[in-house]
Amino acid sequence: MTQKDKNGLPVRIEKAAPGDEAAVAALERQCFSRPWSEAAAREELLRTDCVFLKAVAGGRLCGYISCRVALDEAYVGNLAVRPELRGQGIGAALVRALKAAAKNAGCSFLSLEVRVSNQPARRLYEKEGFRLMGERRRFYSAPTEDAAIYTVYFEESGS
Image (cartoon, rainbow, N blue to C red):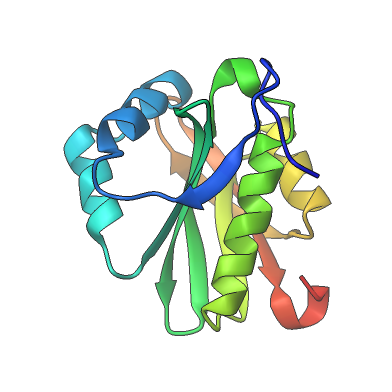
């Protein structure tokens, strides 16, 4: 099933690349209290240990997800979806694509932190097979908040 944005345009999941940093930084400013700058986004896009995927519809960035890979471990950095496009399956499509990329890279698991108050994101991760593993106290700032740690193990989930 092809995801579509609110205008009915098909959403493609593809690899992000240098040149996407301005759009990524703009989306960061819409989504996060401590957004990446263009320079930080460019640095992430250039990392050889990073998998960085984007969702695009009509030539416009709809969302992105990134992770860093170390040996057989993968850790999600950020997941962002344009606020007006949330709830349309774009985040789920990005998570599924990243899980597949991490598994194909030989990773045994994919892990992430999310604000404990971010119930929509937590429901998404749980729906996509992630399990709550614990919390990190005072992990986030602006505002200060605990993080819930979620992990999906590929050999257990069949994902």
